[in-house]
Image (cartoon, rainbow, N blue to C red; front, side, top):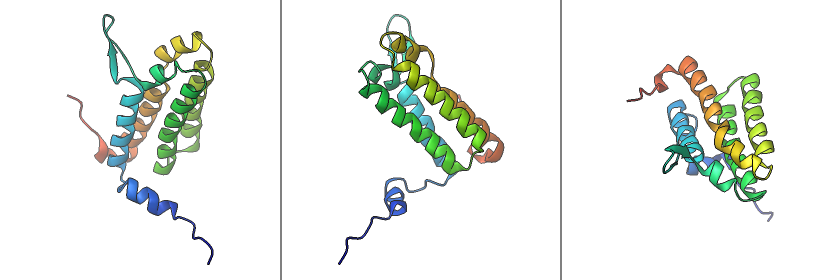
Length: 140
């Protein structure tokens, strides 16, 4: 009897129960963006940084890991049904961040200043606010 191939939809359904719900998608992406871009504050200068800048200090591996995490945000946007031009814009943000972030020293400073995941979240928020107004969260 040949081995059965796992059903990827069933796997994702087990991990993320309401993956097609725009409100849940918004919360997942906002949480990931917070983790990647603003999860820590540097004492003294009160500048928020996240895993993107910290893990990016590790040569090659750090940039690959943060690029994969940023690609997840784009994958979620694709599942949301966003237009291709917005997806390409998001890929451009991530590509610039990954390419320039890979340069030693200069790239670390660039990661500190250029927040591709925040830019991509802004694109997704505009789309959700327009096409799924029930997902709007009022910031306090």
